[in-house]
Length: 188
Image (tube, rainbow, N blue to C red; front, top):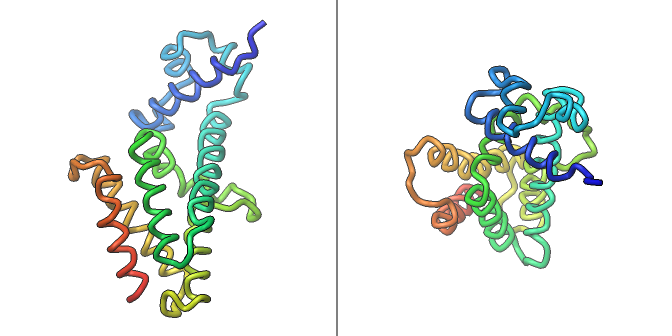
């Protein structure tokens, strides 16, 4: 007997594609089941509703990305080395799965508020790096929220420009330049 993981993965990938292409509200359960080639009942064996599917896609991947950003810092000494690793992680994640990155970017404003405060987000991971850098004296004291938001803006705005076709290069090709900008922002 099959365990259903392959079907669940196909459902989530099809939903992800449709949510990014059409938008969440414009995507129906029938659109998803048609894309996967399954019945609505088969979808409902895995997800109770379209909202649960969207939430599962967001929460699982958003939390996983935060974990990857936190791991990127491990074993690296100093703010510059840590932010370099984090920018590389952002760029690689974008290049590896632009569709998933786009989805997380599109829905984070509506969905991230549903996460319990105890869950670490990508924003938290960057803020912690900033706070640690300030405590070590690697970067000047400032409002850590403002610095973290500014650093995220550097990477996310470039990713958005890539999504819209205004930048042709892979983000990983721009990693060094993005890191240099982030380091200048953190020193300001």
